[in-house]
Each structure stands twice: as C-alpha cells, then as structure tokens.
Length: 520
Image 1: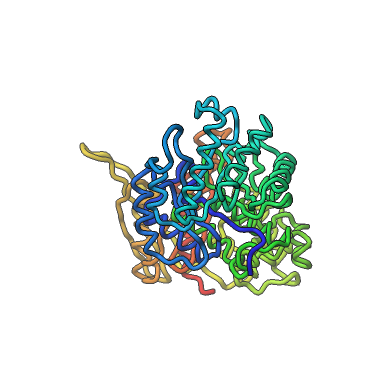
Image 2: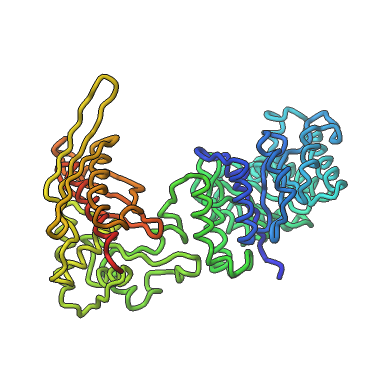
C-alpha cells in the first residue's frame, strides 16, 4: 500500500555534517542496509561531487540491491554562467547511477544577490536547467528549496517563482527547507499550505532543530499538506541537528494516524536508533523520546503505583510498540510499587504483600541518603533484595585484606595491588599491576576469584564513572563509583560509596563479581 507520508533519510549526508560524526564508507553501507530493511523510502547517500569517500560509496552501493528504499545522490544546481551539460558537479550526479537525484537551489533573494551574486533571472534558469537535464537522463528529481521559509518571508513572489521553476522543469518533489531552523510551526504550516495550493507537484518538508522545534515543524508541514519528510536518525546534523525521524515516524503513525513506514518496522525503532549510534560511536541519549531508556521510566512512588494498576495512566503508548520497555527507577522517592515492579523485572517473586518489602524500601532510602544511586546499579540492587529475602544468603567470597600502592622508577610509574580473598575455608592471596590503582585492584581481584569461579573469566568492566557527592569537604568528599560490567550475554551496573575512592571502587567491583555468580 502506498504510504501517505514518505520518509527521506539524510543521515549519511546531512547527518554526517554534525559535530563528532564521521562515517567510513563501510559505516555508510551498513547504515544504508539497515535503513532499507527498516522501510524508509529514500536514502540520501551523500554528495558525489564533494569528496572521494562519497564517490566510493556510490560505486559500491550501486552493486547492492535495496528492497524498500531508493538511493539518492545529492548536489546543487549548475553554477552560474556554466551550461548544465558542462557542469562537472552535475555530471558526477549522473555518474553516481542512483535512481534518485536531489538538488538544492536558492529561494531567498538575499542569497541570490549576496551569496550567488547573480541576477534573479539567472538563478531561476539555474534551477530549471538542472532539473530538466536530470529528468532528461531518466532521474527521479527532488528539488530542495534552500531557505524556503526565510526566502518567502523576504520576497514571497520570488520564492514562489523559484519553486515553480523547478516544478515546470519536471521536479517530482519540491521540498521546502527551514535551513536555519528559525521558523515556528505556525509559519511552517501557513507557507506550506500556500506552496501546496500553488504547485501541482508533491510538496515535502526539510527542517532543522536550531530552535528546538524541528520535529514539530515537520508535523506542521504534514498537517498543511506535505507528503514527504526529510530527516536523520537520532537528529544528527549540523549545529543542533536535523529533524529526528526516530521521533517523527511514530508521531506520524500513532498520533497523526497516517501511514509511513511498514507497521511491522515500528517495533524495531529503538533497535535502529541504537544501531546508528553504535556505528557512529556516539553514546545513546537516554532521554530521546520514544526510544530512550528514560522514555518510559517511572520514579515517583505515586506514578509507579498508578502504572502498576493501569500502564496508560502515565504512558502515552505501550513502549513495546516501538521496541522499548518500561523502566522502574529506584530512589529515595520510591514507594512500594517501585520496589515490587523493579524486583519483578529483575526476576524476584515479590508482591505488595511480601513481608520483607518494608525493610527493603527503608534500606534503599537510607542508602540513597548515604549517597548510593540504584537507578543504573541493578546488580547492587539485586544483591540487596536477595539478602533481604533470604536470611541464609551469604556472599560467595569475602575480601579479607587488600593493599594498593604506587611506585615510580626512571621510566614509568607502576600501580600494584594485593588482594586476600576467602572462599569458604580456602584463601587466595594474589598480586597484580595495573594502569592505575583501580585497574590494579580489579586485576588482582579477578586473578584471585577465577581460581574458584572460572565463569568470571568472561566478566569485563565496560564503563567506570566517579561522582563527588558533596564537594564542600574538598578532597575529603564522599565519592560514588558506578561501574558497568558484562559477560558477553548481559550487562549490569553496580555501585560503591566511600570517602576513599579506592574503597568505593572495590565495593562496586565486589558487587559486580557477586552478581555475576548469582543464579537468576
């Protein structure tokens, strides 16, 4: 079934212009394949006339078969004073051999006079010549009207003339661009409505997030008649970024009740968001709408109590519809329902009637008061609940003594840690070097424990964070250490708190190893 709104992804071109984003050719190919499998309608691969990387990408991409998406090459109208057939940049667009070519041209009289420094008539000719040339070569042509809204507000008649020049030359889509990201939704809607009424071809929208309303502006344009949305995964892009299609797609489907990507793809929305972040080597934003870890997180006791009874009381949709999940947070604001739902998600058979529930809640609130943080420390949380529910529960091992020292010789400084561990009636006393005191302590602890628990060979630390809890006491301040560990199958967090950063680190490390040894 033909979608009511088409999704045009420009992560590989516009998104790569964002600060800290640098895709290799292999990265771009992987993302393109993922986008195609997800079901977007167009994938803008890059600008073949701008750099060797994009030329190589198109050379490799044309050998691949895309099931759902059409690949687009991006470029500009011909240069002023140069016949279109002699323009090298336009030639490279043809040589990219993509079924779709997207070009941009000037809408604003300010840019025509001050940037292009040509006559208004020459700019119209540049638009018309290039679109017609590409159509004559069998291309599906999308014309991006740069500064469409700013240009219209400056000189409405001329802006409309540029859009009509593209339409008359055969453009399949005229896409209105809020290039500076400075317009408000009501402006976007009013001008889009005018464009839809004046043009016979289809109209699209391309927004930026400089004012924080990139997604809202895209929705306003759709409401005014646009049937094509351009954006990037996770809102990557120059300055503050582009319209985020990860937010836009579910808004179109669930809120506007319009079809866009295949319905079955919506459950893979979070997966797509995480995948692109991983390829870009960007830490995922937990506060992203729809797909972030905090998108369906509940912390206040009254909220959790309501969600336990009726999820829709504080959730606008079922998180599973977009591949996400509910997250019950534990803190000093927690109520009984927080503990019950969090414990159940961790595998414990806990209910509101469990006798130990009150003691667990009081312990957590006291620990939080002391500086602990359990929201991202489900490993430590599990151990706390386990100890409260099972009076016979004892740790699998005990640290008898430990010592950390640092020495410096002529060439380098070396940190050394010794750890004495008791397992039952057996003792292991080990020593290890490390890049720092915590690394040395970690190595010594693992060396001691692997002797008794071989499964710990697979456990590795993947993240280590330190937070000063109260800086008023200076270097004597209490420190919270949060570490993340994995065994290759699952990932968990643990926490330690002490005025001594080494002590806090050891507490978190011990919890991590103890949690790894727990049976579900």
